[in-house]
Image (tube, rainbow, N blue to C red; front, side):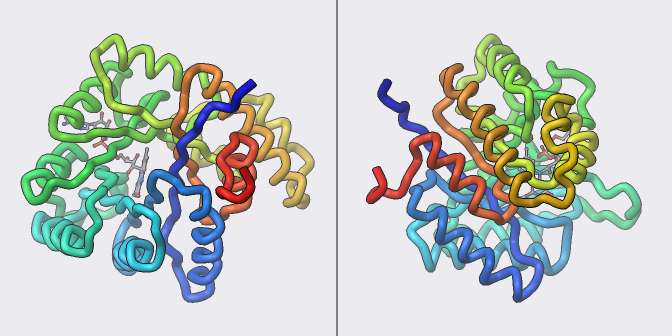
Length: 284
Ligand code: FAD
C-alpha cells in the first residue's frame, strides 16, 4: 500500500544554560532534514527564559532553512512589552506566532497584565502586523474551562480574530481528538487542528503534568512503563511504540499533520517520523 504523505512540525523549548545550547542545536540539526512545516519555540514564565526564546527563534531563522514559529504568552505582560517583541520579530522576519495566554500565576499578586486571554493577544498582534497566527486547542477541555462548548466558542473567537491553525494539547486516547474534530466540523470550524504528539520518556512526570492539564492517561499505557524506572533505553523503545501507534490510528482517521513536542530530544521524534515515512531526502 502506498504510504500517505505526512507533514510534521516540531516544538522545542529555549535552553536554560550554556551546556544545553549545543545539545539543542544537535537536535535541531538532526530534525532539519525532515523538512518540517515549521519548528516552534516555547515561551517561558518570565525573565531570562523569555529572552532565550527570542534569541533562539532569531538564530533558527538566521542559521537554518527552517521556518520558526515563536510562542508568545500574554499573561503577566504589558502592551508595551508585547508591542516591542512583536515589532522585533516582524523586522527580524519572524512572521509566525503561536499566540497564547499562558498559565495564570497562582502565588504572585503583583501580576501586571494588560491581556486576559489569548484572544486579546491575537487581536493586538493582528492590529500591529500581518502575522500568521497559530493557537491552542484542548480536546479534553482546558482546566480553566467549564465545558467543551466553551472550548469551541473560544476557538471560534480566535479564528474570527485571524488564527489560521490550532495545535492541540497532548492527549493519549485518540478518541478525544476525533470527537473534538467532529464537534468542530459540526460547529463550522474549518481551520486545521493539528494533533500535538508527546513521546513519553518520563512516565511519572508526564502523569503529573497530564493530571494538571486534564489529559487522561490510559492505565494500559501506564502499565507499559512499569518496572522501567532505571531502564532509559527500554523506556525510549516503549515511548516510540506508543507514539507510533497513536499516529497510526490518527492517520487511519485521515490525519496528515502532526506536531511533536520534542522536549528538546530529536531521537524519538526522528524515529517516529521515520516509521511514518517522513525521512531525509536521500533515504527515500
Ligand atoms: P486561552 O485560549 O486564552 O484560554 C484560557 C482559558 O480562558 C480557557 O478556559 C478559555 O476557555 C478561557 N477563555 C479564552 N478566551 C476567552 C474569552 N475571550 N472570553 C472568555 N473566556 C475565554 N504555555 C507557556 O507558558 N508557554 C508556551 O510556549 C506554551 N505553548 C503551548 C503550546 C500549545 C500548542 C498548547 C496547547 C499550550 C501551550 N502552553 C504554553 C500552555 C498554555 O499557555 C496554557 O494551557 C494556558 O493555561 C492557556 O493558554 P491558552 O492560550 O490556551 O489560553
